[in-house]
Length: 194
Image 1: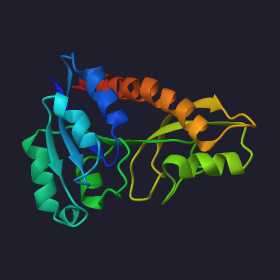
Image 2: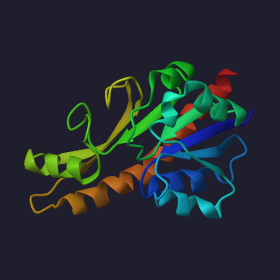
Image 3: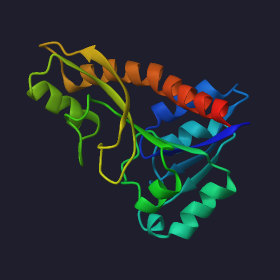
C-alpha cells in the first residue's frame, strides 16, 4: 500500500528536492504534497519540475485546524516530513499524526536546539562552544522545538579552522544521505505492520 508524504518547507528546499528525487521511482512511497509558509521561498521553484501539489499555508492559516487538516486528508497524507520548516507545528496536527511527523536538526540534540537554532545560527554556536564534532538529529515532533523523541543521529568532525559555512557543507552531506533513507526505513516498517 502506497504511503503518502507531505513535506513542509520554508526555505531553499534542497532537502525537500533530495527527498522528492529519492522517492521519485518508489512504488511504496509518494511525495504527494508540499506545504510552504512563504510565498517567495525558493523551494517553490525547486518543486515546479515535479508533479507535486503545493500549498501556501501562512501562520494565520495554521490556526484554522479544519482548513489545514482537510488539505492533508484530501491528499491522503500518512506521514509529514519537515525539511527546513520554521513554524512550530500546531498541537492539533501533532495529535492527528501521532509518531508520523519527523524533523531533521543540523546538530546533535539535545545540544544546540530550540527556537532560533537553525542554519548558520546552529553551526556558529557549535563552533563557539569549541565542539570537535557535530552532525544531524532526525527526531519525531512534539509540542516543543527540537525536543521530540530521537530516531537517529549521524556525526561529522568540526575542525579548528571551520566556519559556519564549512560546517554546514559537511552537515548537508549527512542530511542528503541519511534523511531520505530514514524516512524510507520508517515507512517500510509501517508497510510491514499493515
